[in-house]
Length: 109
Picture 1 (cartoon, helix red, strand yellow):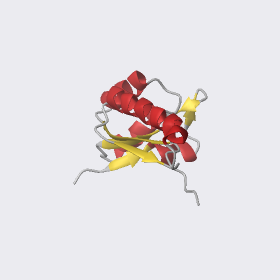
Picture 2 (picture 1 turned 90 degrees about the horizontal axis):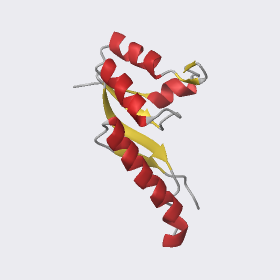
Picture 3 (picture 1 turned 90 degrees about the vertical axis):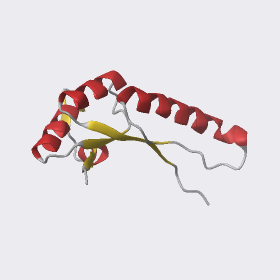
């Protein structure tokens, strides 16, 4: 079994360096714990190429790219912005080397 960490957990704890998410700090913790993978939850305003480079520098694989968008509408036209966001998320996943995406959608009545 391989273990993975989630950038969301670190970002919620305020892991920042120079005003941005401290991806390198998260990766250092992962290496200390012998964790091989990371679920990157949003790009944290970092360029995808930088995310891929930092993960690679630490020998960590992007196992998933997770992001949120609203797809919960009965009418296709109302879902179009969400569908565009999914397309963007797929591009980011490819750029960081993640083989999977997880799309988190808001609940609605």
